Length: 391
Image 1 (cartoon, rainbow, N blue to C red):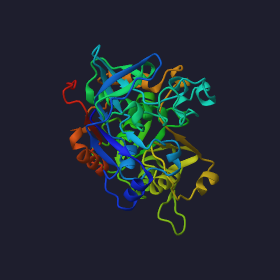
Image 2: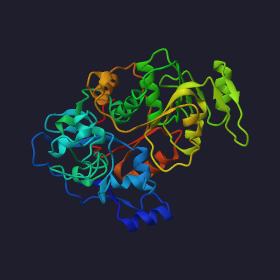
Image 3: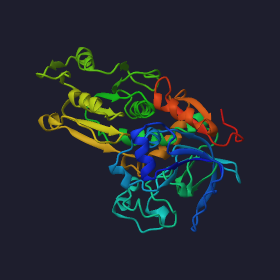
Image 4: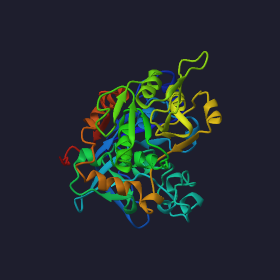
């Protein structure tokens, strides 16, 4: 089987961290075994039609992943790619793949998190069971394959039929389900939201918020093209001036601390979704929130040095979010199920988010394009060029 294989041995990882060149741990291989079906019912062998490149994939390639989170992703050999639309060649049916691997897939009785309806934080993430997979999701262990390979194994419970949904929409199902999961972390308590980061997750978070709350005032913050295409009311470039701009728009007051660059927005916004999660963006989000507001950290992880004083002073809520899964507000349905329905609706505004597509031998160029950011948004790989893309 042909696939891009990541070898995360400690020497390779440390060498890449010291001399950051994408691909030092990654290589295109033509001799890999096709992933084996687990010895349990319900597993299928699929051929990926299109697979996205996520920020976490770029972090792996550049040895920038959180050292703490290496405990959760312990497989030495990984076939990346967890944003997948794939085909069952025996039937021709097309699926969006939910990559979360929980107790039910591993063949275990449910852990507490799974029992409580949170399989996306399954507590047996490192116990492979029947799957052989030592990670919370597919795309971080070669055992079940990944989207950056010619074959991937998945359980029927992970598969969401997409019918004739265009390939470049269907491949967005996984990141869009994460964005919807994040949007649902906020129980609406006001009328103003800010989304920081106009990348894939940020734009899809805007799209989810707009579907959930048609009258919500949404500002997207950050550089890049396509910033307003998914439903934001306005787009602002990054920086401390965002505080003044929103004060002028909404009538808030600007308070200026001594010896700091970023002012505070009194009468600030109700929620900030930070889809970048770097020190500058977290700091900006805290300065934009009204007292008792909510900061939702979406799709990024790492050690950050931030002054958290405003969390205490203004009694803010900081909410982390990861992956996707069942939701009480969706009647127990998963966010992936809901997203697949939205993707089938042409009015769900995500056309154009897939800006680049490469074949597997071009994986280095694909990674470089994804890492460079705007004008690229979602960069994808096409592992099986013989499979037609649905337009």
